[in-house]
Structures are given as C-alpha cells and as structure tokens.
Image 1 (cartoon, rainbow, N blue to C red):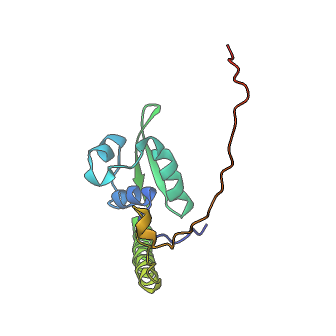
Image 2 (image 1 turned 180 degrees about the vertical axis):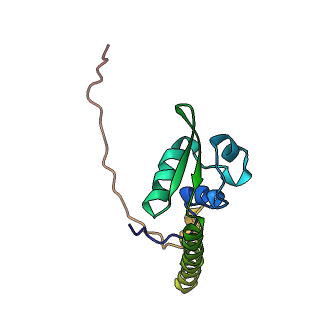
Length: 141
C-alpha cells in the first residue's frame, strides 16, 4: 500500500522510530517521551496496524491477557523505510518552499476607514419636494 507523500512525519511513523531499537515499547514508556507529545496513544493499536501494513513484523508482549507492549522484529527493513521516508519529507518540503517562491504576491487594496479614502467624485441630485399634508392620525393600541 502506497501512501501519499507528505511534508511532515506522520504520528505512526513517530511510534515506528521509537520501536527501531528492537526492545518492547509500552504505552507508559511512550507517554514519558517528549517527542510523543501530541500523539494520541489511545490509538496505539491502530499505529501498530499501520506499521504491519507497510511490512513491519510486530511482536505483541502480553502481561497475562492484557497487552504489555509491542516489539519490532525486522528493524533493518523498517530503518530503510524510515530513511526513504525522511528523503521524501525533505523533497516535499523543498517543493513547498519552491512553490511558495514562485507564486506572485497579491497586492492588497488599502483599507477604507473614511469615505474620503475611496477618492470618489460626489454626485449631486436635485430633489424637489412637494408640500406634504397629513390628513388623519390614528392611534393603535
């Protein structure tokens, strides 16, 4: 399965980088790491599934019936994936910078605070007012 190239590291790729040492990783150890700030760890099983989709072999370390942690078994192959992905991130971010440099800057119109700022020519109309008469006033309750 091929994913779209993005200019930033995905959340599950951060988990993969931590798992590259081959030792079991627990949810508690991930919470203690500062680089995992902002990663929703309640989705840890989903992130492990994403690692399996790209070809990672993940061993589940159990504590009785509960999952105690996860260990990556094929670290060499996943290191190649991370290296390739980091090259893609650098290339995508450089394309963004190049695209931003090519786009022309839009000149904004000056802000209008008063009617004089518009520099408009006044239009004068002559209005004739005929005499008006009020014939009856009714009071409504």
